[in-house]
View 1 (tube, chains in turn red, cyan):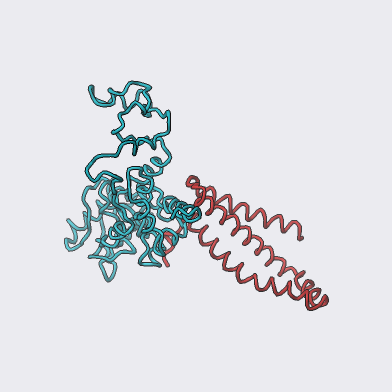
View 2: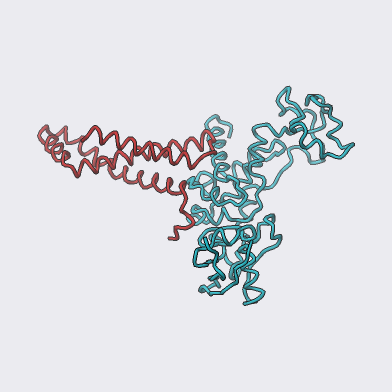
Length: 113
Length: 287
């Protein structure tokens, strides 16, 4: 695919929104499985939570939080465009939504580490 | 940046790129380069242009990967340091030959999006009493022209002088249709009417590439200007035409159309406007 015609901020925002949405959709079954394990016994959930304490999982969790925040902020931007007709400063809004996503990730990291 | 003495131009000739060396000039446009190749080097090269001043929308091509109007694109803005220029026909359209794309599907979609103005009640040219005048907010002033600007260039005896300064719209005779430029609908329409039909947005749109039936940014931008035109009488049919699977709801708001439009129009927001109108019309049972 030729990236030259697509190298602009709002296209990147579209890709981030779509990819984060797909990854979150893939994560959801895992999330529900983890919650469901609480029903089948305390020990099993504790085992899972201990596994989730390892740094690699925490890093992945941070990425997940950033993805979720990016999807939310990007979605709000698109909804503002479509429902409120905010046509001006779209690139600034992309930058702001990226900033929000990274800030949320940072806050998550501060709480985790 | 030092400008190269000559340009190394790769031109798509249907099956492969052919390379040409073109002398670099000052204030040279990409269209100048193509014309030089066709007139001085290779007369078999096919391309299209007409006005050369950014009005007709016929000379758009893909320049170094991006759709552009070539007559208003200066070479120095797009060329690499090595003087390389890559020219292809517009994407998402059939190619007639070399750099000339066939715009038939593009304009067919303007038709499908009901892109023609349909006067509201004027089969005989007569506007019904009280029809259009009513859209003027009560108390709006006619002298929307900033004082001292356009008034000075109006020839003496022209109509504008007939309207006394500060006159209210209500003074206008009832059979005179007034569309206040400052009204919200008119501003929405005005934002999109300068389209020259160059198909740069259409060639830049990924949704067109994914769905060949998709109406595309220009056709829906046109539809949006007409939806906001208080003189138009085909609003419902037009909204129906853009509501389908190939219409506005398929837009992913990548905004490549807005990014690339040489006239700095914003088709992406026009499509968003159509989505919004259809949403509220459907929700409130107006459709």
